[in-house]
Image (cartoon, rainbow, N blue to C red; front, top):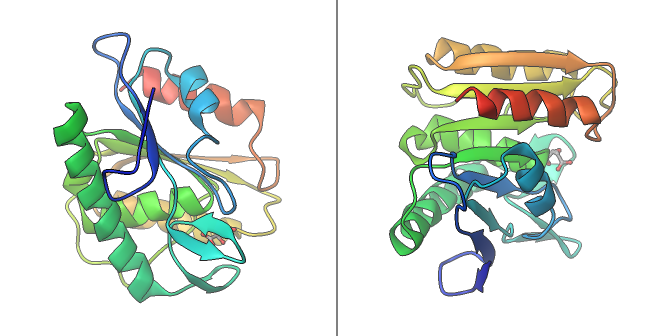
Length: 206
Ligand code: MLT
């Protein structure tokens, strides 16, 4: 496991221990950090390389990947800027550590920035598992996501992400050509064992 501040995000990198496993880009939720999703990543795809950055935006001391004006209302100029910054970081990390385009596994705010990276810099990711994601950009550019795999898992009782919003994200990504699987679970914003099982199966089929 490498911890470094040399690249533009504080992050952890764990090299692959099994060839052929897709590298994972782990993106934490609001108030998380680069350590949060390492165990989840290991559960989802043992042996995969893991790159896990810490969001640079602080909201009351809590790391995030972009600014929001209030819950569910995003500063879209910042979303765009930060998505490009994250895509640049992924490219630099790939050069430094030598791994293929990663599959993002993002939770909440991390899922939202992953969706924005897919829409703005599709080449940065091989696919994305978006756990409790919502639409990050009201007016996204026309991205070509042909064949790009995306998994969206929403909670029917999520107080932060209305189901309609998650469905809109699924249809935006499908409209751009992505191969989208969308599951709505009878749960809230927190992750459940079913999220882990569905995501593990989805990654296993990539
Ligand atoms: C966001 O701000 O990205 C979403 O509201 C999810 C969250 O972080 O609470």
